[in-house]
Length: 455
Ligand code: UD1
Image 1: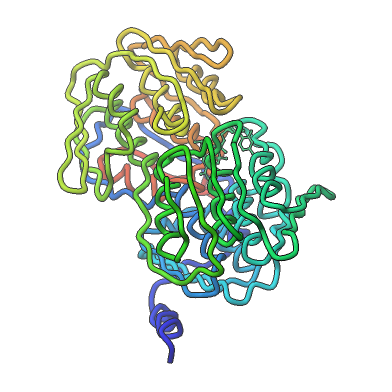
Image 2: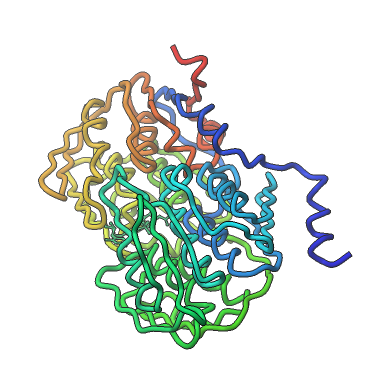
């Protein structure tokens, strides 16, 4: 028995996650979360692997026919399960274990098409394009369509592939990409705008191109460094990770490897803000602070203490009032747009005021009307919001509009007087593993109401 076969056999006897996003999405789509405000957070929360690294790692596994193994995969997330279903439909062997291990063997890919039904659920499905184009010379991906946090085009991804010689046509809502005879060619690509997804997609394609690809104005997110490091383990030749100029020297083929996914900085930051709001002391396990400096500085300014203990982070806030502070979202290492809604929630309870400026996405203030319904004092002007601290928020029925907005409303519910019910929480299931369980373990009064029980 070869090594791959024995690894796959080992997992047959363990606890699996069923790859059936269609069923899962339907079952949870109407669930709500009810929060009873007024309890401090005290306890321990294990941090999951980073969703935004995990999704790209899975796509990158399609660059080889060898077995790829990941640990610390956030396998409970709907986004991960949706992508697993897409890759399975394309012919990849996918095994997801509830201990966070994932095995992928993309030896028998029989389709290079990502259909509308799956792409519309998760925009990151477009990230299969680079690996498919690099390895098979073709990819057909449904256009992601509108998105609640702005138009979010994929022009930068496509321009990158074009520069490498690919022919791109748009037909009936699908992008069809075809590499030239002999495969993609290395190119110098200057991104007019910093894009996480475009950097990753083009980097993956370039690993198997002929010659050198240079990405100028590349994104520098920790998840891109993690992805690049995993690709290097697969045999890719990449330098400049973490800088805005990445060099990729194409190789003829990549091979199998094992990789531990880095911790989720957005989940880590979300719980830090949660403790800032409620007060208390929480140990966040298996995470880091070095990738959150732009959050930690304003949190400390607002009165929160953050200490490291090995790979745990201890967040504490005593009874002193929080102090208002300004933030502006920017590409990494600036303040993460994915923490903007949560930070704004914290500002609603500060002494004084704080200004939040969103520069990454248009239309990313959709949590504002919901927070206002809970008593927050927020004035929006263009892409800035002035948040004037109030003495209390009041529980209300609110609606989640996107992933990070959803969690910001749960955080608001933790400090609001009375009961808050957050509707449309399927957004949350996309990006937070066991949020209710993790908060409950720290004393929060929070429960999930399944659609059959919702009054
Ligand atoms: C990723 C993250 C998302 C995060 C975002 C910014 C994943 C799965 N998602 O999204 O959580 O909020 O980075 O940190 O990793 N743009 C274009 N053309 C393109 C691509 C992007 O104009 O071809 C624009 C976008 O509309 C946006 C900006 O560039 O205004 C940044 O987007 P990008 O960095 O690409 O975000 P994503 O990779 O989609």
